[in-house]
Amino acid sequence: MIPINQLVIPAARKGELEVLRELIRQHADLNIRDEKGYTALIIACYNNQYEAARLLLENGAGVNEADYGGNTALMGAAFKGYTDIASLLIEHGADLNLRHGNGGTALMFASMFGRNEVVKLLLKHRADRTLVDNRGFSALDLARIQDNQEAMILLQDAMK
Image (tube, rainbow, N blue to C red):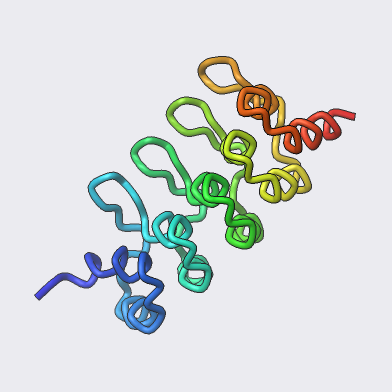
């Protein structure tokens, strides 16, 4: 028989809400990690499983937990462009300025990958646009490198 904690991440990946509810009822560890350090919340967010993410957050999943590379659920949502999930995470206290192993932030991911609705959301909630990664690049620098004109305007307007 598979231990209940080992069922949390697969259920989060697939958005299996009834399975997650039963695991929560049985007091499964919602912050258990897989071999890469991913938590169920990180996996749910990365796989666009909004309701699973909401359920996990409402039942104590750590909103700012990071994988072994320092990536958080908010960074994953920013990378993928899932504005609704990013908003949910922010509502549950996600730290907008956490950095992964290379110093990148959720705002940097959104700027670099053209996720401009997420850029708007993060700026609205006062993400620090002045932070730089380990190479010395800010979100604005990354938007320039990618020729993301919209993000460049958003980030420059945030300076005013």
